[in-house]
Image 1 (cartoon, helix red, strand yellow):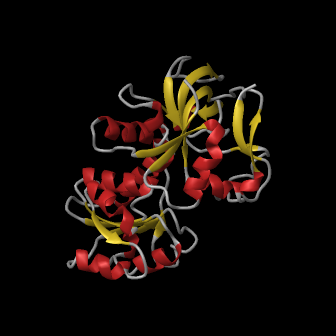
Image 2 (cartoon, helix red, strand yellow):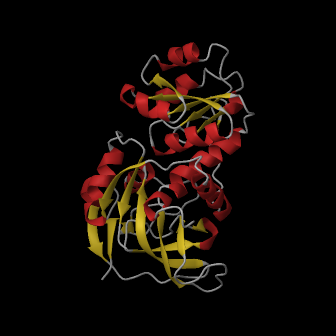
Image 3 (spheres, helix red, strand yellow):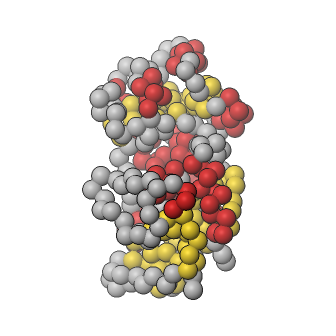
Length: 306
């Protein structure tokens, strides 16, 4: 039977297990995909801990980890158009991506360009698309200055590159150890920590136009002081407090059209997924720990088969 990495209850790592389960069957508007790679994101362990997006119903347990995957279509469900068996695709699974098989809704699935590997494609539906949605939401003119907090993580790496592709100057806030990495993306690096606002102001004496926060908490509170216009303060890391600060959460489009646009940025060389570590499915726990501990640089991907 196919394998999947699941959490059997809400809690910590002790709730995780590699199990065998029946191959899922696609419903209307769904694809059954033989997974080749699955991206790992902070939201994965947060969901194990009980997090749910607003309006999202509780997941049936055991629940398969993973919110982005790439693979090959094995079956198409009723009322599906535009996809066929054998197509190479990537998107946001409804049944979890840390598995040999996953269900992907056609509304949040795109064809994988031949120029992009399955591993790189699996890094795009959450991190790449979140970065893209946020940069588009800010709608900054060419030459504007954007601060990205958490610039060395999966979403941050993509946000820096996408903003640079749109002609925006970027100041990337990240740990001192990621200085060279952040600078290689085309950003000015400012070390994270209690004094980062002073560092940003020194790097941008004429001020900054916007902040894309990916950390939340005290970092978001401090970063809110930077833009003159608080409507140009957005966050994917502190949605619970950003309204009080005058900003807004990142609005996710979650469409196949956005995935197509993000993939095209990869094809034309504007966006590199920066997958820095890969793990097989039977070492999914190690992949998840690397992200949960918060020290990952770039993206971590689980390679499943092929």
